[in-house]
Image (cartoon, rainbow over the protein chains, first blue to last red):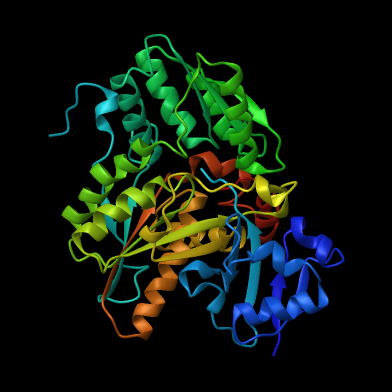
Amino acid sequence: MSIQVRIPTILRQHTQGQKLVEGAGATLDDLFADLDSRHSGLRERVVTAEGGLHRFVNVYVNDEDVRFTGGLKTELSDGDSVTILPAVAGG
Amino acid sequence: MARFDNLAQTVGDTPLVGLPRLSPSPEVRLWAKLEDRNPTGSVKDRAARFIVEEAVKDGRLTEGATILEPTSGNTGIALAMIARQRGYRLICVMPENTSEERKLLLTAYGAEVRFSPAVGGSNAAVAAARELAAENPDWVMLDQYSNAANARAHFETTGPELWRDLPDITHFVAGLGTTGTLMGTGRYLRGRNPDIEIVAAEPRYGELVYGLRNIDEGFVPELYDESVLTRRFSVGSVDALARTRELLHTEGLFVGLSTGAGVHAALALASEAVRKNRRADIAFLVADAGWKYLSTGAYTADAEQTADALDNQLWA
């Protein structure tokens, strides 16, 4: 199982500068645990101590905001793409 | 009756237009709400009117006052018209990586434009404006990102218009920026029918715009209430551009790039409805027309090159 994860500039210090990394997991939670095993420190920038998403971090699975698809329990399939972005103003 | 006492009164009551060629079937229909048919050509005319009227009513805005606002264009333009009509001075803080037309239009209206760096996009403009406001306490920052009158404009006008014209509406799609449109319209529509889906199309920019120094520089508009939305899609420049062109070529409808992002989400919803064999009446907001984006090549130049160039711009 392979999932492409896009990393924003601000978190690339945890991925040796890479903007695209690969991971696996049945859910987003599993994926972050998997990523953290190879990119130490990444998970805690995105997931809070209480187990939720950091307020200023948005995560999208196949371009959809996971806060509306089950949050960290969002289920993943092989070939899905995950994008992590900091929250920015629009308008 | 098409007669009004002055230009400001022409805000709102915009056309809702069926799209028979773009809609997948007679049971799954797409509708466009034409917000370019507002006095300064964008949906922001609604928010600007409510924000200013409220500020005048509660005494925050007095004769000859100076208004300060962080804006990537449309809000500034809407405020610029009001400022001219009512005799206010207007200072807009805008990211430097916005289309030329926006800057020209603001200057033409007589607004003063101050630029914030491209890196950090609108976050940087908001921060810069808030700093300026603190340094100049007699200036009035109406702050579209936190001002409840922004969302209220849509609760009181956009929502009721949609409900009146499309009572069978199943989905409302709009761009997500200050979140005012979706919050106000969403609250109204779901108050009428809780099953209506309120769907956000969030523009996804290039890396430059997300170039924050640390995660705490992140920004979520104070107006944003996640519970009002049903779904939120991220749409990049390639898709927004493709849909903008598709709308123009299929229906002859000339819209701005943020609307292209909305159309992308609307078409995804339409496909889902077809797949699930369900009826749908999907209304999406046309925030503005394409005039301010012509210089980007969005409508005429090579699509791939344009999408690349747009990426480091605040294209929506």
